[in-house]
Length: 219
Image 1 (cartoon, rainbow, N blue to C red):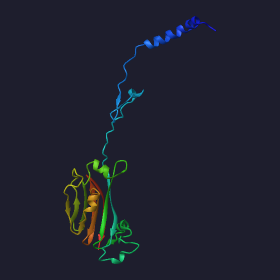
Image 2 (image 1 turned 90 degrees about the vertical axis):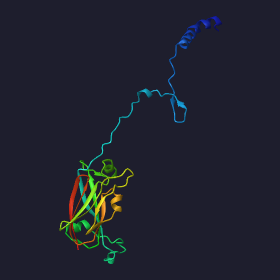
Image 3 (image 1 turned 120 degrees about the horizontal axis):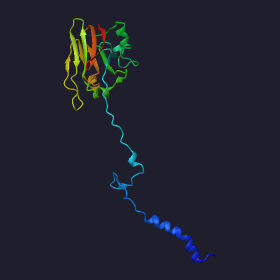
Image 4 (image 1 turned 90 degrees about the horizontal axis):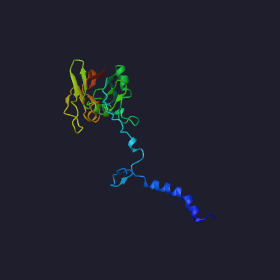
């Protein structure tokens, strides 16, 4: 067995190295990161390498094309009660756009729902969120012109800060307008009632973009 003097001699270099390591100066500790709860967590090893995400500015899409369609039509229940059946409880016409194409007349006092739809330059449909961002909510017009040149319309003037429409213009006559559908759709859709008979041309617009026209008859 080695004596004590030999062991001390062998361990001397190791002890000297440990003492040097302990004597090495230390840098300042990293500042703690505050948390929502008021405590702190140690700074993560790669915190200084995390860059902020790029700032993306939303660009409001604007319509370049607007279409007008007759979404549905309804018989007057008082004049045509037989049209209200178990299979057709709301008395709807089967093919209103087909009737327009075929120049078939709607009956007097029918209710007609017209829809405006906007599309951007890439052909994507613009919904209510996009139209609102572009400042076009309630900046719409639905116009119906009779064969004698008389016009009936509902015309929006924009949206108030509370989300409701500004006071709009409305002229009823041979064609009258309901308001709830127009309000619910930011001015894009309207329920029109055919009080009079004749031939009418419907056209609409969203902002300064006009739609196609639809010619329909009422008798």
